[in-house]
Length: 244
Image (cartoon, rainbow, N blue to C red):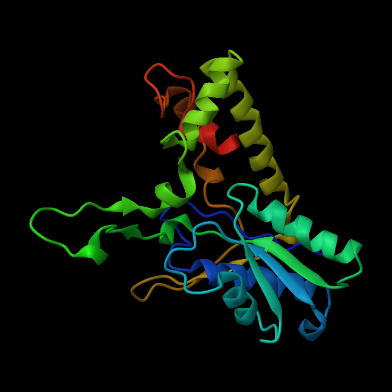
């Protein structure tokens, strides 16, 4: 197994000019090259994507073709919300275990920065009055459709259920960030990261990005001062939500 890890950019950050499928193509192409495998012998691709609005048909297939894999490839896009990438990998592993395939590409791709907002009623005709926009990132990715609240609220409810205070959550989050920063500074995962060439705008030179965007901005004091994100006097900030 060969790993090709895409970098994590900030929301509306340095990777926002790259489409979801372009990011997926870069990861797939790098993984195949590192495995020293001829793309023509790959037998199937399972690739996850949750926020598929405005990407066009069959996002996984787009990413595969962009990576230089032949158009005869069997491709499946997997959407199982937060477990999508894991489910794609499970399906790929099972196909190998069953003797169906020998060479399978699996992974996932997302770009929250590029998810559109919808005018949901526009197809029925826009008549007198204002139209409302629906945030596709919330509607299709971060909202519990059954209880009609954000997924962060689910984490907040579990924190209350298990009596996890804000201080406890901060104390958990801080070492997690510190470990991530240390791993980044020590190059612990450099071998599996796919560097991305970021094109500077308005005549600015391009830059090679090989580190996650958000870690450099981490500040312990600011974390402890963040207001609760989902409930007044609650314990969960957006940063803790990202760790749940």
